[in-house]
Amino acid sequence: MKRLGFLAAGAASLAVVSGLALAQSAPQSILPPGFDEPKPAPTPSPTPRATATSSQTPAAGPTGGATSVPVIQPVPGGASAPVPALPSFAGKLPTLDQLERMSTDELDELLGLKPKVDIPAGARRSLAEVGVLAPSEGGLPTFSLANQPEPLVRAALAGTKGPLVSRWGHILLRRALASRLEAPAGMDPVDFAALRVRALNAMGEFSAARALAQDVDTSNWNPALTAAALDAYIGTADLVGACPAVRLQGGVREDANWRLLQGICGAFAGEAARAKADISRVRYRGQAASIDALLALRYAGAAGEGRGAVTIEWTDVNELTPMRFALANAVGEPIPDPLLDGAGPYYSRAAATAPMLGLPRRIAASELAAREGILSSAALVDLYSQAYTEEDLEGPAAALAIQLRQAYVGADAAARMAAIRDIWRGQGGGVIDYARLVLTAFAAARLEPSEDFADDAGPLLASMLAAGFERDALRWANVVPQGSAGWAQLVFANPAPAGSVSTGAIDDFVDDDSSDDKRKSQFLVAGLAGLGRINQGDVSSYSSDLKMGLGSATRWTRAIDSAAAVDNQALVTFLAGLGMQGTDWKQMTPRHLYHIVSALNRVGLSAEARMIAAEAVARG
Image (cartoon, rainbow, N blue to C red):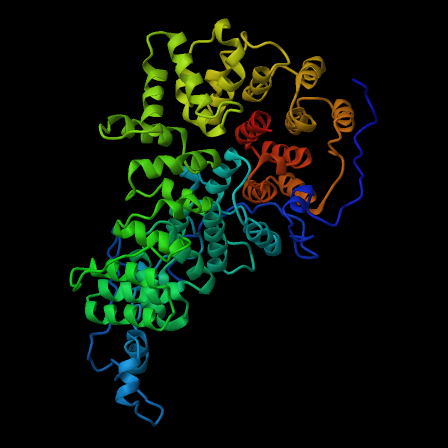
């Protein structure tokens, strides 16, 4: 291979974020003008001890014991209690006809009956740190973003509008978004939570999004967090879970989903008759589709005081909506197959983790969820294990469950390998679906390395690394030939290589690479360069020969490199997620992969960097 010039370190800055952003028709600039460079994360200082001179310190108690300070609330009706004002009708009483047409919420507003929050100060959750994963539980450092420029963090989170091309990138970003973090200086903590909840929803992580929203007291929700949390509740079909916000905020919104939820929440608050009237009013006024109102009526009837049967007709329904899907699943109403067949990936992401759905529906949705990182390999195996025990289950799911069992308990290694191959081939043959590699990860790891399976080493190792089984993968080091697809996987599985990777082995891989534009070779070189496993001169030569453009820079590359320079894991992860937006690895550029792997490796997320690089070579 011809060697060309050295890496151009001073390439001119481009006006767009990256080639990936162009491929996705993204705006030319995802970051606001004039954002500051990332700054070092502050070192948390110890909390100062309270002293006797503190204005908030209670009077000293008996020597040697702690003092309990009770929370005293005013007695209702006492002398200090304010006298409630009578409702004001602005000098004009509404007519009886007007009163009859008012919704429950409108009447509550008119009469001053809107619910109020009365949470004692000691029971309120702090907004200083919001999230569900503490550092001790695998979350990222709490103070990571406290000293970072607010516009940069906002741009990175707001730019995450869909799935990521990388399964391992998805797993890492989910962990970062759910971490217990302090908001950047100058950013409202509730806005920060709303951005993270919205990003999790966009990734199909509705359960994590709901948990994050619930870490903020409902009384503190702003419109942005309310909207994002509502999407999370709909995505999990947990419609009653939205009731605290819906009841508290009343008529702040006029959209159909909000009106239907008001009726549902009224029913579960013991106002069954009024709830039925409110939902019926929404239907007759055309504020919501008839099918949605009927499903809501059935849901409200589950509160225990419903009257009359509700017949659901799908005849004139031509499309699904998230709310329609959630309502139908929540009440156990079967959705016609034609509607499901034409539905988008949103519905597979929601169905894969919906416990109220039957196994066939969840299994049908599970491959997309596994491919994207929503479901783990263990969760996928659990689904098929349940399918195996279902005596009445038939069709492809049942057949695949039998094959998976054979992959574990076959009479010998050859029988288990044959079952694994059958799972990979599926019904279509050809290229192996990555979801099937995720499914066979545990079975592949159980196989003893053997020359008999050398031809299958590439997908076997890709399968193991899809679940992070790097130790099991490294046992195959003496089986796979240098420069092969299996060798490329092991290069990244090894956390501590003896030295730089041989250019001869890389050349062998490039020569045998039949992928379009030699994308696998591009990703191999980009990953090795990001991990620092080939010298800079070779990086420059391969970049030129394979037309990778690793030397050019963009605002995004400078931002993620600067975040890595100050050792900020959270900011690097958010920017990496932004750089991996897409639904296909064809949307990923080698330049993006190089900067993502390099930045993650530099901030101590080396395992994730290596798994992303290995996945790129396997799926490129």
